[in-house]
Amino acid sequence: MIFNITILFWVNNKGFVWFFYILPFLLIILSYFFKNGLVLAELSEM
Image 1 (cartoon, rainbow, N blue to C red):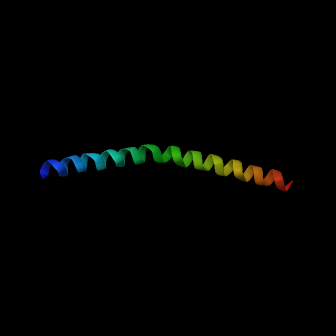
Image 2 (cartoon, rainbow, N blue to C red):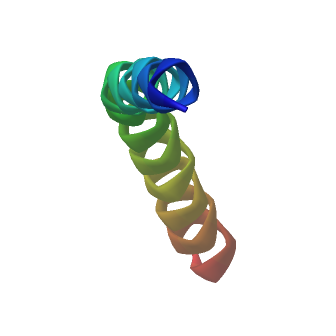
Image 3 (cartoon, helix red, strand yellow):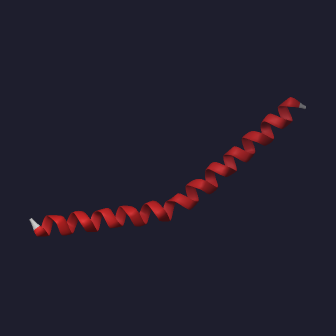
């Protein structure tokens, strides 16, 4: 039982680390596409 909890805790921590490691990249990609979308919208209005 304790062994299972230890494995679960380790996996959860790994997921946490990966989440915080990938989150900035996701935000950068989202902001990049958002800016491109705004630029395209402005160009299409002109």
